[in-house]
Image 1 (cartoon, one colour):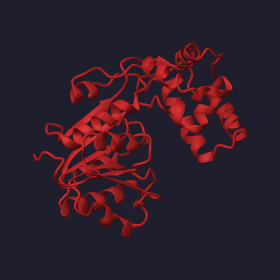
Image 2 (cartoon, one colour):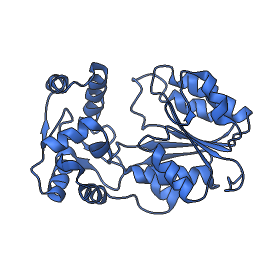
Image 3 (cartoon, one colour):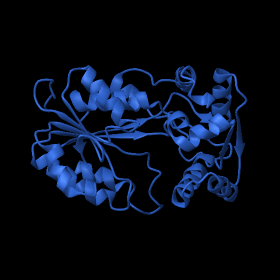
Image 4 (tube, one colour):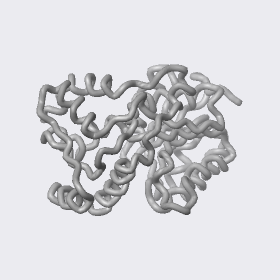
Length: 282
C-alpha cells in the first residue's frame, strides 16, 4: 500500500460541490493536499455522460473520491472510469455507496461497488445511512421543517441518521492513510430515531412548533405534487420511506468507529449547530 502524501499527486474529488464532496475538498485542502474538485460546472469539468471529460480530471491523480451518476447506467460508467483511473496510475479509489437498499429484490445488491472492486486500484466503500444534513441542505426537506410540518410516508419507523461531517472524515482518512484498503464501512449515527423524534429535536432547538405527520404513500404523492416535486423523485422517496416504515435498516453501523477510532456524531449535535445558523427560520 502507498501513502498519499502532500507533496506528490493531487487527489480527485468528484461531485466537489455536493454535500459530501465539498466537505472532503475543504478537509483535504486544510491538511495541505492538492485537490482537484471536479463537477459539471466547476473549473475541473467532469460529466459522467461526456467521456471526453474523464482523462483530463484523472491526469496525474494519486487517489480519487467517487460519487456515481445515480442513473441506470451508473455501474457501467463507473466500471469504465475505474479501469481508466487504475491504468493511468490512480492508486486508491473511495466510493460513496449506499446501504444495501437501492436494488430490487433478487438483483445484484450494488453493481457500482463491484465496478470499483474490480478496477485494479485499492478501494474503500462508504455505505452511509440517511444524511442528517438532508433536513437542512435538501430543499424539499428543509422547506418542510421551515413550514413546521414534516410529511413523510415513513410511519413510525426508525433510522440511524448519519452526520455528513463523519462521512467526510472517513473519506479523507481512506484517501490519505493506509489501512483502509478493501474495507466497506457502514456509516451511521449512534442511535435510532423516529421522524417524530427528529421533529421534536429540531423544534426544541429552534423554539418553533414542528411536527411529523405520517401519511400513506398516495397521500405523500399528492403532497409532493402540490409542492412541484418530480414524479420520479416522489416515487423513489415513497420507496425509501416505506423501507424506513418497515425498519428494514434500523441497525447501527460501526464504520466511523472502525475507520476513525471514535464514536459518530450524535444527531442532537447536528441539530444544535444547524439551528444556530437560523436556516430553519425561513
